Length: 382
Image 1: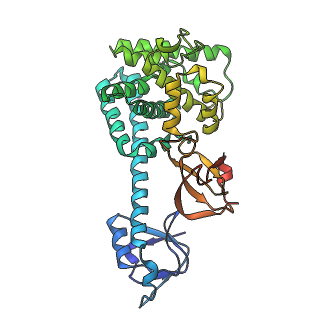
Image 2 (image 1 turned 90 degrees about the horizontal axis):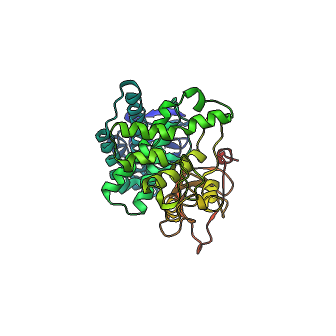
Image 3 (image 1 turned 180 degrees about the horizontal axis):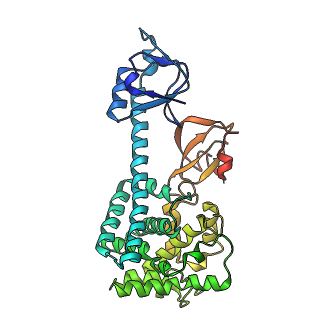
């Protein structure tokens, strides 16, 4: 599509093809002219360009005023949604960069500033008050240019852990403690040769044993900086499991620190759904079901419930097909029933990609439910 400078728009002009705000958001159809109000709003929201495959047509009268009623309001909502998505996305990737720099400062300068980390955790908690679901969608699997996969992994683990802590109604100081524990739980990986954890094929048993020492290394590092036990213990215990099947000490049940139990399930979930050099990701819905069934004895019941209600049975960001054959992305959790989240519809019943997305609340009463999860290739237009 061609870039159309907003500065070239004139009231009552139109285009021979649809006019797009962004790739997925149609602004105006060919029969609808541009208005002065729309031009002013585009400038107000700092849009320099819009996009179209068509040519501009000048109009000297506007017989279709009745057809454009409400367009300004739709534009406002679309721009606000895009602006929020960009703002939260920027925060997420800045957080990944912050943790990358934080870890590198530890490796290069032996510096570990807990107060600096605490301020970042407070920012996450503050953003959760208004945009928790939006922020959690960025924990969905994605490709990173960053060298060490455990950097975005600890960010995702922290976001999921804080969502669980929020559901459990932990007081603010406990949430801060939990956030710090999650962001530091893999610090011991800095002592493991990257040639092992970035190996592009199956690990040998010896290599697996080497990686498992990261829990002991992490605890030793954090205690060396006089980090509180409630935080340091998560580095040591996040691979312990309630049934005693974990490591390094085969602890059971509530003997495992609460922070460690929360970080443990969050870490396990993110690892299962994420890319690794030596494995492909699993579908998030399948991972949730496995936790609820096959692995239910490995985790605390109340924490499993908190995970499911925080992410839904169909986790945020999952591609899904609905019972009416439309396709979409899980957009928001349903606090009363995690099986029926709010979905952003992106494809119609025939599989055609929509230019304007809309939200639908799945509901047992309405007979609109998620039929199945989809692979990325199934989201392509049929």
